[in-house]
Image (tube, rainbow, N blue to C red; front, side, top):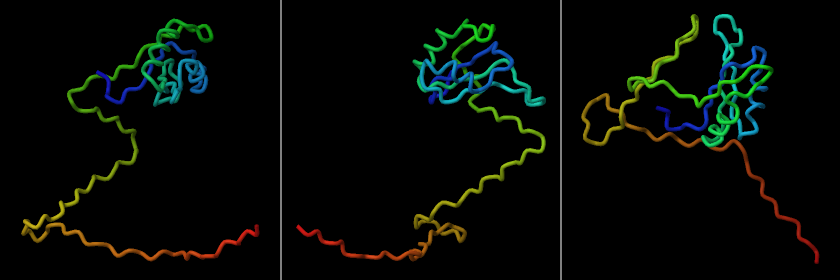
Length: 149
């Protein structure tokens, strides 16, 4: 099952080892607007892997690209091109694994709800209007020169 905001994410396998992101984008440019093209990298070594993803603006253009590019050769390598399918999870998106030493995000603070007049708790949130700041600039007004006719 794909997400609701699916456009045209295409999976491309059997890429030449030296292909760059730009070359991958140029290969799919004829089928529609390429929003992004990325060749996968090994996270441990940084070495390019032989597959990648191309995000094309429309689903129709992505299907046309799959039909045309599946089996096509680039630098002697026959491409395997498919529509990218996101794996189905048990109603919970999988969190990406964190790299060692990566900074963690601070927990979100929950603000109390504004009081609706029926809450007698002493810690209830009551919004206070903030005073407006005066502008730090002045508008200079001048009369426009008159045209002589």
